[in-house]
Length: 74
Image (cartoon, rainbow, N blue to C red; front, top):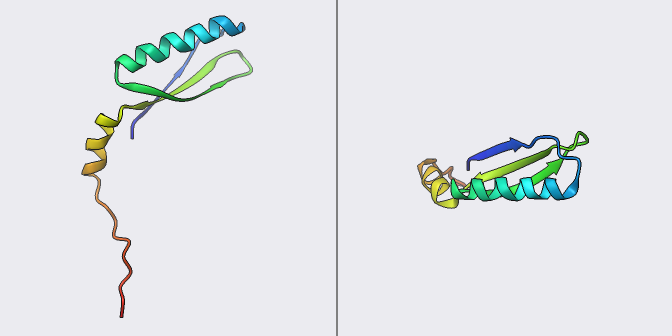
């Protein structure tokens, strides 16, 4: 999985903060990311964490080797 983190500017009011989060989420959705979580700091900045779309990450996951989980039996 690929993640991207973005920090907004200082937005001390709720409505401008919500509008900025919505705008950035829509922008990132067009680039193939979805908002996974967010946090608001004491300095009135939002930290937005986006995850790459499943289509992109599926190819990456297929390339990873799978570890064997079967135990040997006697």
